[in-house]
Amino acid sequence: MTTHDLRHIAVFGAGAMSRAVAPHWARPGRVLTVSGRTPATAEKLAAELGAEVVPWRAAAEAADVVFLGVHWAGVDDALTAAGADDGTLAGKVIIDCGNPVEVERFTLVHPERSLTTMVEDRTGARVVKAFNLCHAEVWRRAPRYAGRAVPVPLAGDDEAAKELVAALVAETGAAPVDVGGREQAVHLEAAAAVIIRLLFGGADPTTTFTLTTATPGPA
Image 1 (spheres, rainbow, N blue to C red):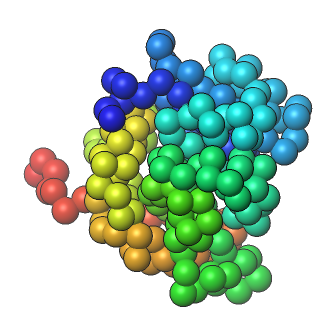
Image 2 (cartoon, rainbow, N blue to C red):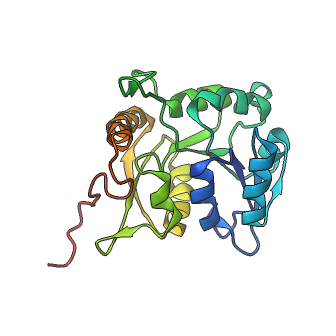
C-alpha cells in the first residue's frame, strides 16, 4: 500500500501529539477518525480535522493505519477498547509515538521491552515506532530547522509497514530514517527519556537538540 491507496487513518487519542501530527494527513479522498477517552476533547480535534468521532473498535475495524497518540499509561485500555483481544487490530499498521518514561527519575518504565513490542505482541499488528523524539510543538509546523527537514527515526520489523509510515512522515514535512527492527524501539525510548528530562527542566521544546542526518547540507 502507498499513501495514494491510503483511505482511512484512525487517530487514537486527542492529546498533544494527535493534535500536532494528524492535521498533516487531512487531505481530499482520505478519511480521518478520532477515538478518545474524553468526548469534548475528541470532538474538538475531530472538528479541527474535518473528521468524525468514532468508537475505538469501529475505527480499528475500518482503518488502514492507526496513529496511537494515547499516553503510554492508557495504551492497554485503548487497545482493549479497540478489540485487541479478538484480533481486530491484527495485521493493521500502528504508528507508536509513545514513550513509557516515569518523570521522577526520568527512566524507562520497561527498560527491557519497548512499548512498540508490547503493542505488537498484544495486537498482532504491524507496529512502527515514529515521532517519539520531538515535543509535539515541533510537529505543529512543517518541521524544518536550519534549512533541513527534521529526521524521524523509524523502528519496526515489517518493511512494508515502515515504507507506508515513512511516506506519512514525509507528508508532515519531516524526513524518515530507518534505524532497524523493533529491537531498536527501546533505544529510541531511552533517548526520549533524556530529552523529556531536559524539557521538564525548561528547555525550549523546539531546540532541545539540533537534529541532523548523516547527509551533509550545503557548505
